[in-house]
Image 1 (cartoon, protein in one colour):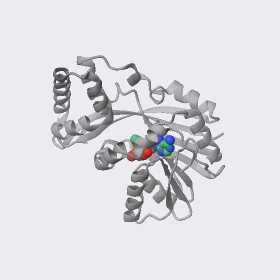
Image 2 (tube, helix red, strand yellow):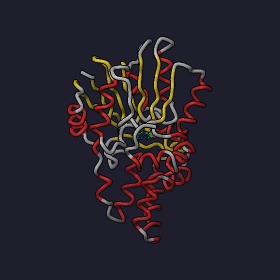
Image 3 (cartoon, helix red, strand yellow):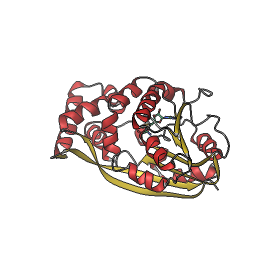
Image 4 (spheres, helix red, strand yellow):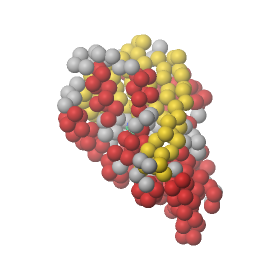
Length: 278
Ligand SMILES: C[S@@+](CC[C@H](N)C(=O)[O-])C[C@H]1O[C@@H](n2cnc3c(N)ncnc32)[C@H](O)[C@@H]1O
């Protein structure tokens, strides 16, 4: 493991959050099912490419791009989480994909070899840095001149139903803490400034809107949503059982209204960010 920064995130992604993420892996994959192809199309990995997958989690995108990179290329999956890396190694072995490697480390400070990659990608794995400028500086130096960056991050939580339904239910009955609104990656102007400051060029931020299947029925989705750290944190802050029951009833109504024959579908809103290494 490299120098310890992002201590809170290290703890989260090696503790409860990682356990819950692994338990919900298939649900998360289903939520991302229509989003990931946008990233893979933008990445356009070719045979022979050397790719870095940042915050690769359980390695689904790592395996997908390793297939495109072929035997002459390869992928390094970099993630803070030991438990998720174990799952990633198992899934890659099961998929019979050998041209990849996983390392546990912090993308903000991990000593990546300079100019070693053609492409840096991430599926929702670059949103957790204490010092995003340092992290993207580190990632840029790992790209060769003429290399490319492509990542997905979430739009504003209140415009993205993956999170907005729960948040709006709280807002209907109580006031949300201001911190919920302060998400650098939700604001394309701040992302452009961040990447420009780290030396990236030709920075583009494209909106991606897709339906996302979040569960089989509203009871299943409620069980999941109630287990998420954000909702547990907001419930704890609420500290009022009557209000909590109202919030949950509002959420349940909203998810029930989105029930389709094959599950509960919400409208996901992400940003697809692409840039060149200069
Ligand atoms: C929301 S999950 C996304 C995982 C995976 N890319 C996916 O799409 O399923 C975020 C991932 O970023 C990782 N992560 C968070 N901060 C990180 C950092 N500073 N360096 C490397 N990985 C980090 C977490 O451990 C977690 O696996």
